[in-house]
Amino acid sequence: MTSSRDKLTMLTAYDYWTSQLVDAAGTDMILVGDSLGMVIQGKENTLEVTVDDIVYHCRAVSRGRKRALIVGDMPYLSYHISPAETVRNAGRIIREGRADAVKLEGGSKRIPMIQTILDAEIPVMGHVGLTPQSVNALGGFKVQGKNDESRKRVVEDALALEDTGVFAIVLECIPYDLAAEITERLSIPTIGIGAGPHCDGQVLVTHDLLGMSLGKPPKFVRQFANFTETGIDAVTAFNDAVRDGSFPSIGESYKASKKRHNLRLYGGGELPMAASGN
Image (cartoon, rainbow, N blue to C red; front, top):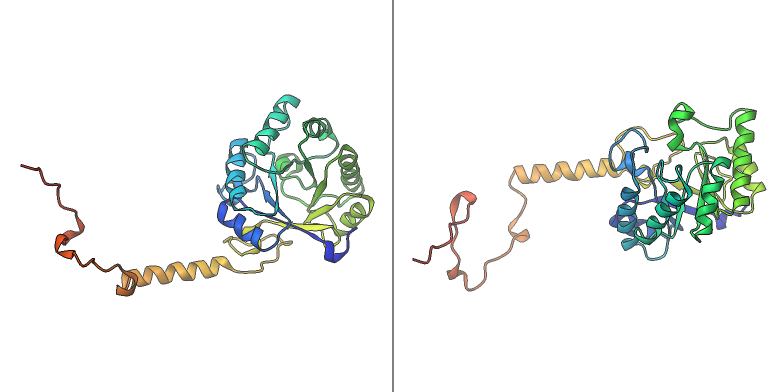
């Protein structure tokens, strides 16, 4: 387990602007997560996100990043069908998306696919506990590792992933004592989300920590700002200023040039028809 001063940070970004913000703040890793399906596309889960989606958003994020490591999520069914397709999809995220590594969900049963990606010299981050792509099989977004059988499975999955060669593992929505045990037993970093304070690092969806979501955040989210409230106030002020005529002011407008005798103003907000030349 790392000391507190060595703790790693990872945040999501799906676009150029957010990438710049997260990177400038000194975040260690940027995750271009399939969570974009819910956060950006407004879907109920992550299952409809495609490799094309991840590649597109990775490329935007890569343009804003100067130092952080970019990890691109492998979406549902992009690493389930065959080794060849798995490597092709991972390769696209690296080559076309300009990510530095890929992340995929699942434990022991994903080892063959993970090994294939590693054999292609592509770094892999693992993900155990609550795996959102398995939401239907898990019966919803539920905390994992709460009983002995589930706890044993999460530990075994984490150990198997380390043995395979992943460079880090996300632990999602598991009891904090289980996360502490796994972190102690692994030599690679654990990145927690809803897994308590004893992991080697933490990851959150940036929109959640900035308070950019209208709904109630999950229990494990701490909102460090309230962009939604600030944003609504700002947009309301804009609407009011336009409607009462105070925006734009003369100071926010351009002056005509000295050769304004060549300019004519037309009423009604319409431009004149071009001269026919006759």
